[in-house]
Image: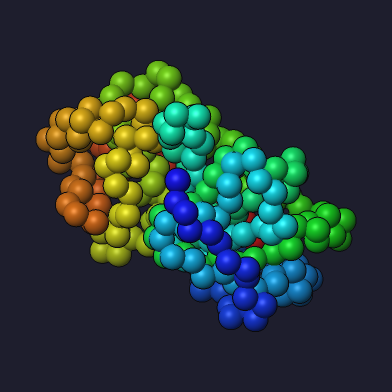
Length: 254
């Protein structure tokens, strides 16, 4: 685990919600004027973190909730002997810390995979959001249910999918989510996931993961060279993963 710790959020709001660059994407639903006014008050600042910095620690309590404004993070659990299971990844627009807010402590850790900028919200005002804005309350509920769906899909992969299906599924899901977050340019994605992280996501050794990638590359469905991932056919990658191509519907952004 990283020894870097998250610093306190900067009190100044550098990117007001009404000028959020993510709002320009078709992926995210618009706020009503009343919701926007609340969000302008709700956001307390931004947290700028280097890659490798811990955002949340398993078993800890945080007074803040976060939305990823830019960068990548990953969520994971560790066993007492240090073995790690990556649970999910957080991309721009994703919400972090809801579980710790509801249950007082986090059951997993979150670490910055790249340099990240996080929008910061005080945890104690979450109940104000639920009381005053049913639309935003539904959005928070949707984000929690969406996270559960992703964890369920990853669990099916680790438990039932073959080696090639597991790796294809993770690459497909992350590429599709990154595309929806506006990170794919001309079919190419700056992909910070290492083969070691991928191995801890699919539950294989690094050697097994490397061999599986070599087999998958023969399909020509994608190329992964250095920090760049290009997907030639999401349909083909979905077929290799024994799943359906990801949907493209709109989603909430807190």
